Amino acid sequence: MTQDTSAKKTRRARTRSFQAEVRQLLKLMIHSLYSHKEIFLRELISNASDACDRLRFEAISRPELLADDPELSIALEFNAEEGWVEVSDNGIGMSEDEVIQQLGTIAKSGTSDFLAGLSGDEQEDARLIGQFGVGFYSSFIVASRVEVLTRRAGLPAEAGVSWSSEGQGKFTVKGAPGLRRGTSVRLYLKDGERNFAEPFQLRSLIRRYSDHIAFPVSMPGMGGEEDGEGAEPPREIVNTAQALWTRPKREIKPEEYNEFYRHVARDSEDPLCYAHNQVEGRREYTSLLFIPRRAPFDLFNRESPRGVKLYVQRVFIMDDAEQFLPLYLRFVRGVVDSRDLPLNVSRELLQQNDDVRAMRQALARRVLDMLDRLVGDDADGYQEFWNEFGRVLKEGVVEDSGNRERILQLLRFATTASQDDAQSETLADYARRKQDDQNEIYYIAAATPSAARSSPQLEVFTQRGLEVLLLSDPVDEWVIGHLGEYESLRFRDITRGALTADELPGTAPVQVADIVDREDAAALLRRMKSVLGDEVSDVRSTARLTDSPSCLALGEHEMGVQMQRILRATGQELPDSKPILEINTGHGLFKRLALREGDAELFEDLTRLLHEQAMLTQGRELDDPGEFVRRVNRLLEN
Ligand code: ADP
Image (cartoon, rainbow, N blue to C red):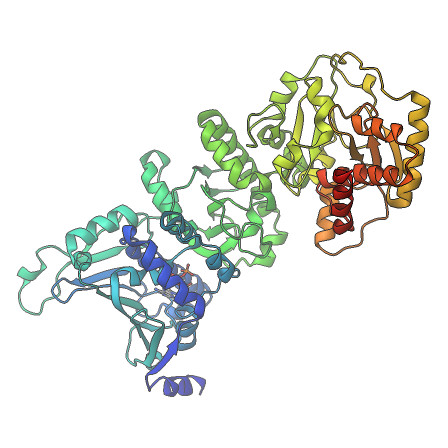
């Protein structure tokens, strides 16, 4: 019944509009990918291969779907004179609703944000669009018109659908009864792109980009015309047609791994590195894992798909099987092919399966091995990796305590000893450079590396030549909090708690005599506290500062600044605790306070200014910025 009505509703051609995001993507793509036109072929063959994979998977429980056409394959046809090229498969196909949905919209969440964020710089945008994944729509780079004929496996012959579009914002859908199972996509090439209908060109593109596809990709064979009138030319299989990971490692060239990666990860760039392992013994499986060169646009979206493509005995089972890798390695892409899992395994089953858990641990170690190798073989490559994915890998310190020691070696930091804000120093570097009597690793957390680097709290450390880690990723305080120590060096937040000059290693600089008498200073600090009331929990003198007049210190048990910022940004209540205002009693401004003690108004202005400056250098917001500006102007005029 339902099939009847769906056949009826498609009889008449109906024109529809592409989703706005598709229109935008089409425009951008045609504009920025013109120098990589040939990618359309790889994308279409990749889709055809996925369609065959999905049919083989559905046929595990419904063998009748394969029916009288059990050999899954991909075929190219072309006609140089008429200027078209066609990619066909006998895979899963699409129903009418699926065609409208899948070839008229983009399902990825965050797409409009992604498109809005493109820079207008052609090269950069081309790279980003490549990473986003252009897929089917890349046909319009070379085609002035695209026609798709498709029939979903399991639906009757009348359920065939034709889809066509000139890529200008609209597409037309119409019933096409009598189609065979699967999909064919025909591209009518633009003038100037007709070379893509030449067999020589097509053959070399398939060999270059699609050799790893596990299904045979065929073309009409050479010399076919001589076979006489009406006879089908013999077909030539152009690719190796064997799942890449099942081939012996030594026979696979790096370019083949790279092309395979582009297919699995839908990335336009080569991976940074890969690891291919065939495991035998109690559990038998093959893994082929890749680390991408660039982070996807949705790396920090917890909902975005992650994980590997899962195969069981070479049969594709599912995309994005996230159970095979821990969350902190969610950037890893690739394939796992198990010999032991049941073919009908579900996501729920994967979650509970002990073998899967053991495989996840083994795969995590493989990824860490791969990163260790990268550190050793290609330091720049590792730095590139860290810049893209360091923020994610760090989570492993908390998530994967079993591998904590290994992950620690992989961490990279910006420090006061490095030239720029790049995160490029290891904890081992720090430990090697530390002073003999130093038993702590100093760190400071701020919103940006430059804010960390210009914090007044660093002054005494700089003066004594003590290195400080400059932390600026939102997860840093949380990660360090879990670390406690590294090679028995305790981590210490240099903005927290009291700090006296004699507890620091290094040579103390020659003491400049305090300008203000000790007892007078204490009385002044008390008076400052009474001016500020409960805006601060205390006002005290400090050894932290050498140049600045004031700074804020956290109480021993107060929440760190990053954590506070995260809570504020998510609109959560902050625990009620006030920072301590610390004063450099050797500073000229403090001397000025002492001298002009009698002028109550000036005393209050200077006190408040010292507090406000301390807030600002720590990236905090002032309660009343207008009053702050008036105060500064008053003082400037005086
Ligand atoms: P992607 O393949 O990255 O999802 P595409 O734009 O290339 O994106 O394709 C969109 C969707 O259209 C696919 O996810 C798939 O559902 C469907 N599709 C494309 N080509 C085929 C095909 N040859 N057979 C069946 N479905 C297809």
